[in-house]
Length: 505
Image 1: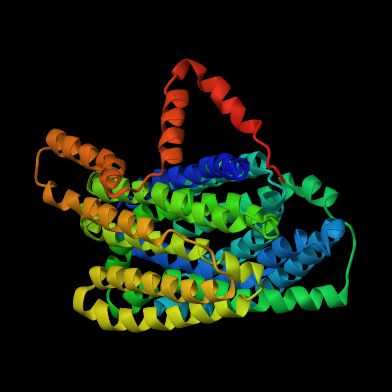
Image 2: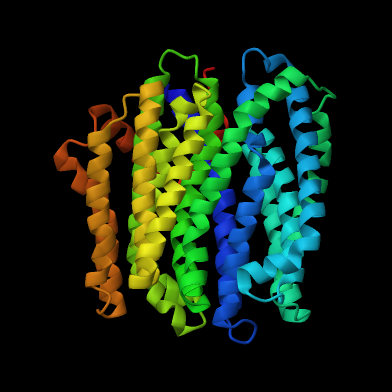
């Protein structure tokens, strides 16, 4: 099991580097998006709504194909025909993406009217649809790299794509004065580049194959996931759609600033761990020690994530003032801890879904997402008129808590895993207290304020110790980790050692 954890850790680091690059590029663009010279506060709100619309479109276009392909890729009955499984999924994904483009292009004006009450953004919506259709294809190719543990290739190609998108976005906005349309034209170009770079890799991993029985089985497995993906995407974006409908675009913009800060945690930590761990979870579904491995993944990922939550929450005030060109965005720091803590339950939900995935109970996943989506809509309708962005943030937190609770209950019924609930709860309450501690010192001068916040951040692991959080083996491993990585002269050798880790399977 130790080698499996090390393999997950190695791949998580590599995926994390790529995801960090995504956020760095996102942060580099925030000063541009918040610069009154190029965009108003309302324009930033429009960008936010278009971005979340893209998430919803991609969730529909993907149709559960990445998850189905990943599940069948390692299925013992089909492991000898992995290239055929990928071919069948890829061809179907291309057809779906093409169908969405042909359907939605003529409706771009109506979509603009429905979302923004005018047709000013119809061209931007067409570019968004095209970019989303290409991204759905790219997601399937990304899934292939993940199941093959090609984390270095995955990160290198995606970082190249991001660099191109960054350069083109700045060029289209600053030099060509294209405004919001330039953002999505750059994304179209980046997605086309991705497909071109990986065309040889994709061709090498396909073998013409179609089996109706297998296709029906994959479709039955994937359709509930389509509903789940759509509902999950909707769950992620309901808050901003609700603010757009119930409040003002200005509130959408401010809320989106807070969301961008807190979403660093999901992208860099939760998604990186998910990318690395999910293929290994399926590889180990027949292994005798898999229950403890799954439980450790929850515990360790929650620990790393809570460190991130505390750091982001404590320093969000300084970060937002640093990256925003307009003071109208500064109040966003007040809701960052609430949104950041909701990510804790997102991760918990991901790591408690293993039993449902292994047992192919995707219908349960779809049902819990739909229930959570309905709850989130109701909470937004209730709380946004009362508290605006704070109401939207609280609605998100409550929904993620309930979402995890329902998912955990049904997953444990299907496939019991001995999760360490006491330790996870201890982490949450200690971390939540530290996350809000920054509010007490934000009126201090910069230097003492930063010192106090750094002390709060570093205190988290030590505050857990008196409660018996660490096992003897874990303390020994932590000492070894510190001893190894604190020697800066051996940094190169230590990094190379990560490449030598091999899964015992």
